[in-house]
Image (tube, rainbow, N blue to C red; front, side):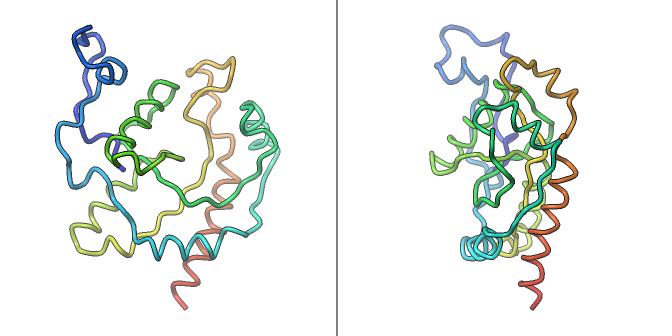
Length: 187
């Protein structure tokens, strides 16, 4: 899903006469852009998921400490999931920005998609493959190396300054999952 397709505008220009969703998100879809969302080959995605869902993924103390700041993440360990992502040209962070992207995903997918991660590159890759008739060959392996919303008691600036505490372990796990899929597809 491409979170940039639509019209985003300055909150200072929103009036009480505007619809509730416009007042809340300052975003209007306007058009149903053909490159606003991409539905991947479900058989390929399901096969990739089934190949990797039981892999033992690595974890480390840095990633655990970052997750433990979030009550819903305490005690969790890295795992493989089959889910929806949203990409944007700009890095976004903070509760409102994340909520806006969640809203865009709901609107664009007509309620069928639920965002589980965000990224930047995938809409570009997907659109290039779509234009060349090869979108059915795309499989996306994403890892979660950080959070887009601050932990309780943390500001967005503090979150951004904390860096990517799960980067090293996420990179290791992405290689493990991605190479498992690649070796299967190459066989």
